[in-house]
Length: 437
Ligand code: GDP
Ligand code: MG
View 1 (tube, rainbow, N blue to C red):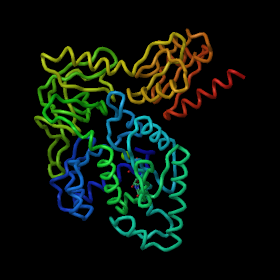
View 2: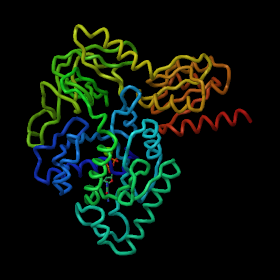
View 3: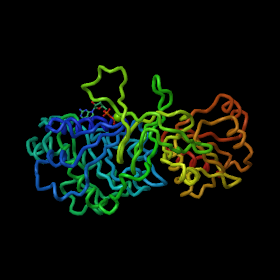
View 4: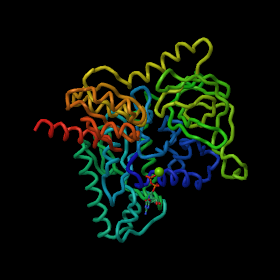
């Protein structure tokens, strides 16, 4: 997670790349939207075979957040889909809106995470030492450069403190239960990358062992990451399967705005190996996948599937029950209760959930909260709320239809749109204050 351009994809590429260089290319599996790195590869990378027995995790599945909001879709039943997170911040730029937003989401989900202070190679005078652990490369830098790094690092630590997190350079942390580790890294040169893996494994061991139970044979359960149009395939779903098995031909139930979708999996697609790019399709078919994994699903009738929604495998016997379950998972997020209250529209289930949470925290009544663009109907509905404090339409990362915009111009409805969650909350608070004055 983190602000756009702060280096998330580069870091993941480097983790994958250095692992491949370490001679275990076959062991790294590229998934759709995710990369699986087995524990042996990581331990090998860390250079201490004794570590092998210390870690119970079979490996790590890294999910790259495709857009800068997509991490709000990394959800499962009101919780976080990810067990751990890496927050990437450019050490030279410091905190940005999406950095703050990442932290708020992690706080809400209580997800353990590590902060990566990236792009240390950009610090004036830095002499790169390819793929070296942080301590080793730090020692090789001049006193001036070291001081510059410390200054920038403590700005990051200060920002974290302002956000309510005790933090420290990770090698100075004595208790990871109450202090966040900050790892100085260059995703570009690989410096500090072994340290990130080490801290992640440490967190995995400390926080997750009890929760690492999952079933490999049960019916598949996953979360929709993205609904994506693919040439020749139509709409497809990129999903993360976090429990059980999913097979070609399986009946799946997927959350949508209305009744849950029911369809049969036509194809399960994984990225082709690099050596196979001569094939026309970017994808190769597989007959089944087992959690945890990322995969693309092709199936009829995927229009209307929601990013962030659950996807569950059903059988003839369980279908009714699974449909009800998926429906209730979606209804947990959508609310339609207070008759006087604001209207919220958001791009994904996850962002909607985050917004509802933030406004509820401030005890703001909500009349309607839905995924989708702002339509004429929404505008009309907001205008029926008489109290000006609540005759408000909130839009997160959505379009405003022209006829809605036209209607709003003539009405007293306050329209607030942004692509940063906490900005919407702040803008709303500001609006309320103005109204009260
Ligand atoms: P994302 O949007 O967070 O996924 O960011 P990217 O990984 O796409 O990186 C954005 C830009 O920053 C790219 O041009 C990268 O090459 C560059 N970049 C990423 N990490 C580093 C780093 O550690 N050092 C330097 N100098 N550039 C970096
Ligand atoms: Mg990226």
